[in-house]
Image (cartoon, rainbow, N blue to C red; front, side, top):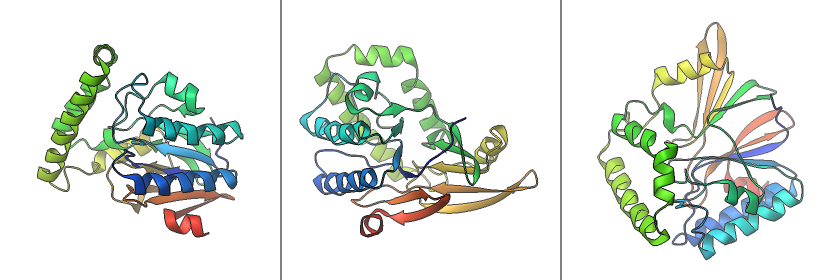
Length: 248
């Protein structure tokens, strides 16, 4: 089991060409993290959408070109799939130097057994989303999708985004958040002391007592254009706004 070094945890940047302010800020954060010698953990939805490694736009290439020097310098960049960029694959990793992690992924920190996840698998109250998630994570479905022309995939991604926005606007707040029982089961299944995840866009710290032990769940925020992130340095976890991280 891998032991964490100094690292920065971020999620839900949802990078896209129509939000240049978010990208400019994110690039500054990534560069600052690299200068500090931090490993970078991106817990899903780096991009607003990703239609496959063979359909890279000039904007997406700029993101790759920013990550590559970070990994070349010796800092690790770890990625988990989100619900928007689940088609990120080996070619992206080769071009950027990033490594894809399974979801969830267990490691060790000074806080104990630490479980990392995008978090969407724990939103079990949203049955419609879970059915969609099971479909798009199926290897056969992904193979069929990637066999379609690039422009057809782009159109499908635009349609999916509209449907997702409509679903979110109509969904109840509790429906779109993680399920309490699912979280408790994750803690116990992995014997985790700490869970770090994104997806819900509800940055916070939650404390539990399970099986006679204290546990903590830390939720990362989305970016608009800044975000709530988590710095792990000298054995301490520190929630920060990304602008404060740049100033610090």
